Length: 273
Image (cartoon, rainbow, N blue to C red; front, side, top):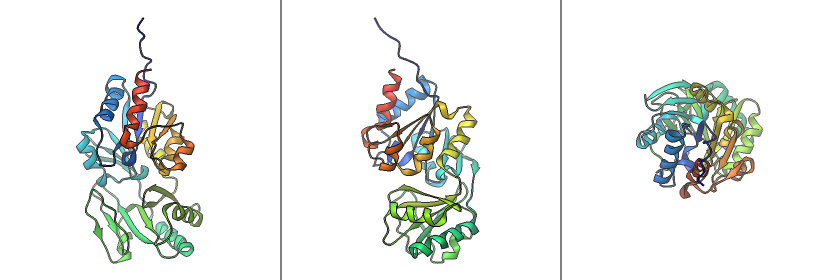
């Protein structure tokens, strides 16, 4: 006797981008595309990409994927409509507060190398003296004038230290700035200073509200500590096998890695009931 699969239990699938939806070569596998299509088209769920990247560093990826829905960018600071190429919301980091926070961090750690993500649909990422630029999708803009970094509205500040690793730097920075700003570790070599209270969860909640979807109807996928608030907001959080241990510790489930179709593994199981 045949049985009918149970309905897909979520109305929203939220996925991080780097290390989660994207494989290490920057692509999305056919299997993962098919699983997301089945969840969205057949089961009626929505898919939202939630990334630490600001819109200018994200939209070319979304265009390549043929993605036309909402995307939460810049650690929750921006809600972007990919189909309309339109920025719906944007939160900026107060630059005086940023300068104060940076001075407090440097008082504890010594000099930092800095970069900033400028606000807007075409906002540049501007790298200051000594900042080590990783390979990325956009050409880097350099400035030898530290004051130029805070000369225009920004979403966030990237910080690096010549000796401390990412976890140690994030820990020291959080201890130094307390309730002034948020500090997150978003990836290898990526420690960020953000507006206080801003997380992927705040941006995702705004985007979900636009779709009429609640946290209780959401499954989220991620790989880094900056995904912890998103897991706390969503009904169910799935960490990739390649995820940071801090995220695995709070996940409801650990799936296969981003290179092994971890998102598809979970969605296929849910679709089959």
